[in-house]
Structures are given as structure tokens and as C-alpha cells.
Length: 436
Image (cartoon, rainbow, N blue to C red; front, top):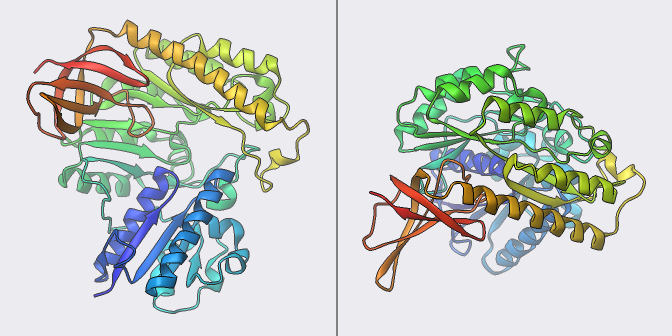
């Protein structure tokens, strides 16, 4: 029996695709391993969305090829980097045994069985659905990809080039996969796509994320349903109503704003009414917890734009804000804009924005002191006379929002929900005490 290892780089959407690949290969009789030195085949599922991701992918490929020299491992590269570089991949990495881009991941097994792959590099897309999926974590929380590609043409983004136009899955296919995941122990379902709120517009003629959420909320095993990557332009009144009506839909939404200055939003080709949309959401759902992503250092950004952004963040609409330095991709339209900003200035602006938002975060957690919330326990270990417990509340996404931390005199079961009281902050972690 051949052993296969899959290395996943990049975003949660890549994680889901890699889990589909794991399921497909397991169904074909391969043994799955995490040890490259015992594997016969390695697949590197890459990201190239920004420069740092591209570099990480290239470094990983070289490291795996070093293992190949020692063991004879067969190495295949899939996903966004081959899609971006196309024919250049074989020139850069002649020792790689085969490549596929984003739109032909389901053909990867053909390559491994020595069939032609040259023509498979060009069509963009993604592995959007599969009847086979092998989860890569034992934590009962996972991502569910509801669509592939993007209908927007933001000037800084190459996703449409890498992944193609927006392509929704059917409601039936998403709900069926969610039911299978729930039956297999998943308690938290995190909906993802490049733009989750545009779901359904291409196949149903209208945005129907609200209808999908209603159906998912009826799956009784799902304690939390979480929404990431909501595009401001497709957040509907019906969607906000669904958040009000269903308790297992987390009162949490991730809305990548990218900026608040209309000067920069115009250059980015982003919705100019983003600020008004955020204000509307908080008016309709005053208790919802929002997170966002910001790009600073975009070509033409001025001190005035940065100050305007900080003034907006200081209003406290967002609990969490990810701040990213502009990454100049030559394939993106923004690379052709004037007034690119020096890297040292960009770093200072990022720090300035992050420091301003951290003050907002501490203030908002202070307001929540002594509030009682559910804790989803993900780790429990003994240190001295105490047990250190780590988990998340409904307003914390895995890996990006920090954790809830507390100490206990006794151990508690993993992957269960417990009532805790919020006590304070430690960095971006939230200190709490156990109530039950």
C-alpha cells in the first residue's frame, strides 16, 4: 500500500480542498501519513495570494524536494502557485513530478498514475465539492466551503485569475455535507468562500445565504454556525433577520472592509458605502460581534486616509481587526497605480492601526467583564497544582481571534461547552473563570 502525505498552505479554503483530496486518495486505497520520510508520495497544496504566501509555497517545495533527494519521494504541487506561474513551474522546479492548478484538482490522481498533465494547468476554479472528505483535525470544528471563485474585481486581488468567476454550490449539496459532518461529531461549522454573502446569486438569481443558514440551523447537532468573509455589498436585510432568529447562528460576522477612506476604497474598487453598511448592521444587530480586515500602505494612501481609518475604528464597531501591509502583486491592477509607499512607512502605519485597535479591544472586553458566555474547550493540561484550560467563545474564530483562557482545580472534558465568566484580557486572549 502506498503512503501519501499532503501539506496544506494558505487559507481555510485550501484546508477544505486538501481534506477532499485526502478523502479521495484514502478511498483509492492510499494510506495517509504526516511523515514525509515514510511517504511514497507528497502533495503540496499551495497558496500565492500575496507575496509572502508565494514565498512560503516556494520554500516548502524546495524543502520537500530535499527530502526527495534522500528518499526517492514523488512530489506533486497543486493549487494557486501552479495556477499563477503555469509553465514557469517546471522551469523553477524541474524535480517536481507533476503540477495541477486550481481548476483541475480532481485530476491529480491521473497525474500520479503517470497520465498527461500539461493541459491541466490552465482552467481556474477549485475543488468545490466531493463525496469524500477526511478531516485533518480531531477538534469538532471545521470549515464548509459554499462557493468558489469571485464575482468582484478588486484592484489588489488576483483571486479571479487564480480561482475564476463565482460558482455557488447548491443548497442541497451544502446541507448534505453539513449533515454528514454533524453526524460525525462536528459541533461548530464555519462557512467560507471568497465572498460568502454573494452565495446563490449565480445559480438562484438572488443572494440566498439567509435560506441556506435557515436550513443549516435545523441540524440539531450543530451548536455553532459561524460566518466568515462577508462582502459588504451583498449583506441583505433577510440575512440580518436570520441572525436574530436562530440561536445556533453565532452573533459574529467577519466583514473584510479593507479600508474606510473613500479615496482608497475607490482605488481598490471596493464598495464606497462600506462604512454605512457596517453602521446599519450594528443598528439592526447591536449585540453582534464584528471582525474585519484592513490593508494599509495601498498606493496613494495618505496620512489623512490613515487617520480617517483610525477615527472610524475608534468608534468601536469591530472587536477584532486584522491589519495587513499592502502586497504588490504584478498581476494585480493596483501594481500599475501611482504613489507606491515605502515599506518602512507601511510598517509604521500597520503598527499605528494595530495599537489603536488594541485599545478598542481592551475597552470592549472591559465592558464585557462579568458577562457569562459559553466556552468551547479545546485544550486542558496540568501545570503545577492547576489545570490550564483554553478554548473559544462564540465571538472567537479559530486561529485568528485569540482564545479564552482560565485555570481550574480539576480537569474538564475536551470539546464540550461550559459556562464561564469574562474577567479581563491577556494580549488578545481573554481571561475567564469557570462557573460549572
